[in-house]
Image 1 (cartoon, rainbow over the protein chains, first blue to last red):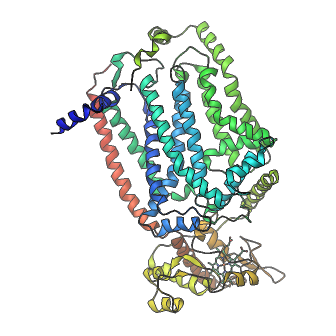
Image 2 (image 1 turned 30 degrees about the vertical axis):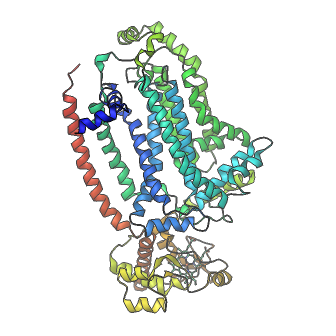
Image 3 (image 1 turned 180 degrees about the vertical axis):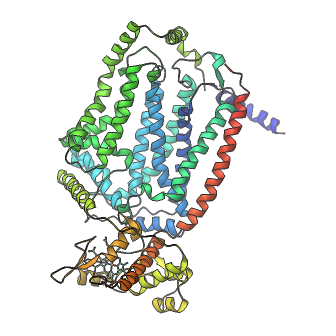
Length: 414
Length: 215
């Protein structure tokens, strides 16, 4: 019976073909480490955010007079409303943890290289969309931090030459953050996740065309590729279990970690809270904003710091595969960069005074230097490595590496 | 707009400076019903004169175990489902204190230091040499010394005040998150389930991967 139904569908829709092509026959490098679990996790978090968000929206009221109270209604009176809300508020932070790790893995192995440039760029678009969604979602509880965070960040657009004030007003729908802002942020906060879902689809179509990269940095021979299912479905499920243990520890035992005390005070346009600090996931960029003494310069630098990752496929000019795995200089730069991002995050969380100001400026310099010095350093590094003689292991990799023009033969319709 | 940002930065600097100065007293928050009910009673008889608890209803006080006739006395002719308003209208309070007393139902989560802050603040009143009353934790506060803490030196009386402040604080912590106990006990089951699930997945993964030939 079941096979007849499937047969009926298969004559009209390539169901079996899709399952085979994308799952049971989909070739995946067997040497993927656990760092390759984070893409799946990001997808999981996205679905969880959308699911909890839809239920929250059934009770939430996007109106300046009702928003704060409606969140308390969810927390107190709605059945398991507290659970929905804490999953959603913790999930926002979890989302950034997961995608930042996912990005760091890509950086470490330089997986953005040909032929995966589009993976990297669609990923960039996803990151920007997630940031926009998180920023707008943060306004919805209509607490003090919500209000003043939105006020300060929308203000930044005022530095646009000639039409700054117009843009700020266009974003807010009013002279200052108010009811118009809240309703439009709610509308977009509900919309963008579905667009994210669509871009994830594109990200995955690209992935299934170029296939996964792997820690060795080369495309593997067929014998080293194994079917995604069951080997990686089970590995992803185990990773999901570990992730959920950590996530649920926060949801059930420390749910206040990601909710500022000041955000439990209803928004008050007449009272500036003592700290206006963005959420942790924006802190490094916020530190860069503050490190530039000039407002316009600061805003430009902050914007650049978010999108500059897109130049990596061009900026990294080496022919040596595998990223930090085989390249000592790149590896050192990678770890310095990660440490620098943490330092910037710390600087962003502190009041800008004393030694922290120059420290933030040096950290900003290092941040950008990493990208701008990459073209010459990656070239020099390769020359230096070749002069010293490549290890036999690396030579073997070079020999196996398919010639560039043949690289597309693995692709196919998805 | 630049000024707004600069203003925010100054605030940041000032508050960080201020924070470094005062050390909050730690309070052990109680979750047992008798303590919460006693805290509720103090809050309703002392604090409710000025403060509302708009997310809490009389019914919930009765559920905590506060005696029925006391609850009936406080609510008067209002139904049990009525949210607890302040006995003093907000503008009258604002007129007499210079500031409207904030709602207390979410207070335990609305200040840095949370429970410890409330506990320290309530007990933080002292009599200055010039005879005026001050507060160590919120020096410019407009709230009077409602528990009559300032100037008390008798140890027995002090112990009584500490107990009272702890009960009030515990009640406010409950009021800010009434589902906290339910959340934690459910959390234990969830984590237990996840541990079993994850362990099973771990061994299942080992078995599935064992079918691959070694390279």
